[in-house]
Image (spheres, helix red, strand yellow):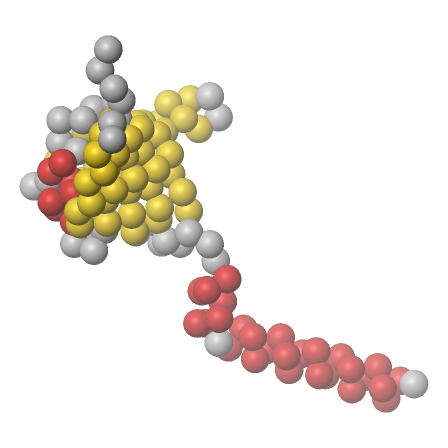
Amino acid sequence: MLRSLLCAAFALGLVGFAAAADPAKSQKAQKAQMVKGTVKSTDPSKNLLVINQIVKEEKVDRELSITATTTFTIKDGDKTIEATGKEGLELLKDKVGATVAVKCDKDVNVLSVTATIAKKK
């Protein structure tokens, strides 16, 4: 009885060690993060997007670095514009107040930005 318990514990330890030793599998398990808020400012020269985010009933500024591979989807009424990197950031330059949803990886590198431009009344 004791021998079977020890063998089972050893087998579980080997499985746990093998799972911990394979970082590719553990990275896939972590989900991307979503940051939602509104555009506060953009600085295409620094590849920077600043958004206002509400965290626990408090407005917080969040600075996000945009890379050349960041994809942008901008919805303005019936139009949808897609761009990448600095070109996409330029499209948001004068869109202060636009609603954004930003998808980031586990290291908070920006993967994609989806923006909805509010209709002017």
